[in-house]
Length: 128
Image (cartoon, rainbow, N blue to C red; front, side, top):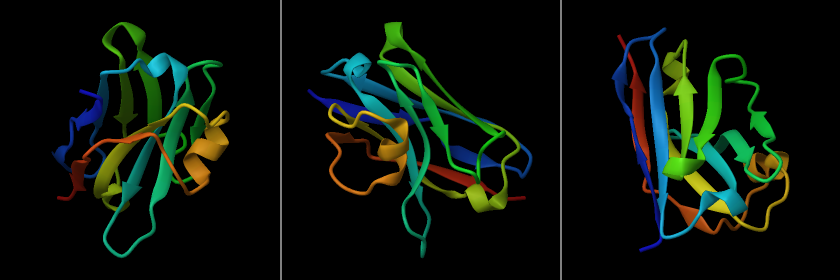
């Protein structure tokens, strides 16, 4: 089967950390641009962080820059999002997506439209 599966979400206090995982099955991520997105109730979808496997470039939204880090493990066919110094504003459902045609991380994270694959999402709740 071809799918992306997110994991690692949960409840964390402000200032805490979580690591999200996006595991691909049925295809190899090394030919794709990969992105983490979030959409909280009442808000538009936001491209949080994206990575391009081919040139190893990365992108971070201003709201998370300096706090989040995107990385990959080729052997595990998995992309991670390390989230540190979490704020209540980070509360959302987080989704990963992959696309084989988008060539820049800026486009992957900022241009709305088709993506080849979407995961089901994992919930992140930042609350005391």
